[in-house]
Length: 193
Picture 1 (cartoon, rainbow, N blue to C red):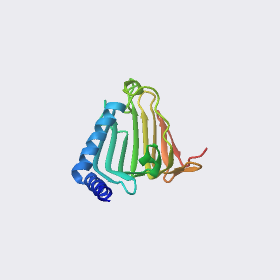
Picture 2 (picture 1 turned 135 degrees about the vertical axis):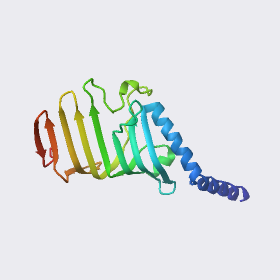
Picture 3 (picture 1 turned 90 degrees about the horizontal axis):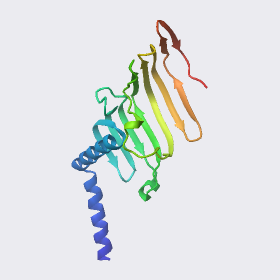
C-alpha cells in the first residue's frame, strides 16, 4: 500500500511540475527547436498553455514562418488550440479538434520563384510525412492573401469560416474577396464546389 501511495504521490508531483510556467517555457522552447530542425519552420508564440487531464494544448499570438524567411510568416493566429484523444496517452498519434482564432494565411511568391513557404527539399525529415487523423478543424475567421509577383496574380479573401469534420465540412465566405490578374480584377462573393 505504501508503494502504491508513494507512486501516486510521485505521479501527482510530476504532473503538477509539468504545469508550472518554467516547464511550459522549456517545452515551448523544445517544440520551436524541433520544428526548425525537422521541418524548417520558425514558430513563435507568446504563451503555451496545456492541461494533461483535458488533453488540451494552446498557443497564443502565434506566427509560423519558413526558417529561410522568419520575418515573413505564412500563418499567424491569435490562438491555436489542439485537443487530442485519450488514446494519445497510449501512443496513438491523432487530433480530436484544432481551433484557430483570427488566423491569417499569407503566401508570397516572388518573380524568381522563391516564396515565404518552407521548401520540402530542405526538410531534414526522411520520406513523406505520416497521415495524421484529425476529427475537426475549426477556424471561425480565416483571412487568406496569396500574391504571385511573377504572374501578377493575387487573391485576397478577408474572412472565411472553416468548419471541417471527418465526415463533412464547410468553407463559407463571410466577406467578399478579390482576385486580380495584372490590371484586371474581380470580386469573389462565394466559395463553392
